[in-house]
Length: 310
Image 1 (spheres, rainbow, N blue to C red):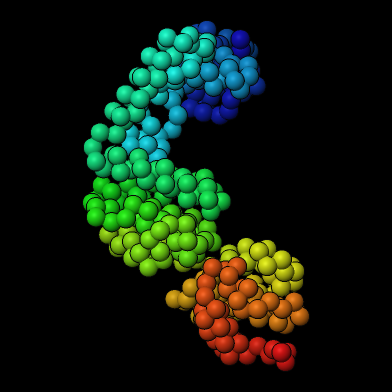
Image 2 (tube, rainbow, N blue to C red):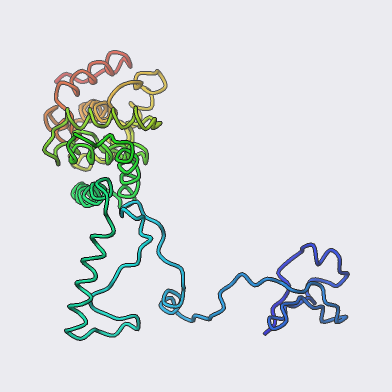
């Protein structure tokens, strides 16, 4: 089987043969010029697999590399997982072997997490998965949150603290790192510790792990809040314009992005006659009415926005 020479390289520069006449001899591992018979390059290393696959299923089955490392398992997914239903050939096990495989599977699960830190990480992985799925967040958040939690656990930050609160703080930190518009109030609602405890754990994680959190753009929250309130696209565009103007004037620094987005939507809805109460907008944004009211007054005053008489 012969292929044409892929392109210019060191071997081609030494040869005077035109590239279109240079082919690759797979059996000998040589690039040969069909015009002159000259061996352009020999002992070429083939970095491809030594097997052939004609379908995606064959490619997956014949590959001898494992799954990528994951932070969701105490051993990073290095250990082999024992199946209790099928053998190495994919055939179903009989009843006796299935019972034996189940016993070995349970034993391996115990060996996967032996230290207290590994057992704690295993519990946190289940809680993080539950929290991410309950909030309908991207699956990529799970791995980032587990990486943060693992670092906190190995540094001893989780000792003596609520696992749920530390998990919630890790998920919130992961969302901040990935610029996903989720407020800490929404995450705190899913755990028993409450917002105050989650916020305390979040500050501890950021300080002790020296995490550099990106500044969240309040415009990212607009689409979600508008969708929850079933407002028009015109309100969404106007709210984004208000926030961009506020950012240029330096009014967004140090403010809760969800509260700013809620206030901008409230102003835009008033201007366009598609009104919603502050309570409705605050509920959709996951902030308090007081936050919406304060940010609303500040934006109207600093941006000189004329509003219609209510």
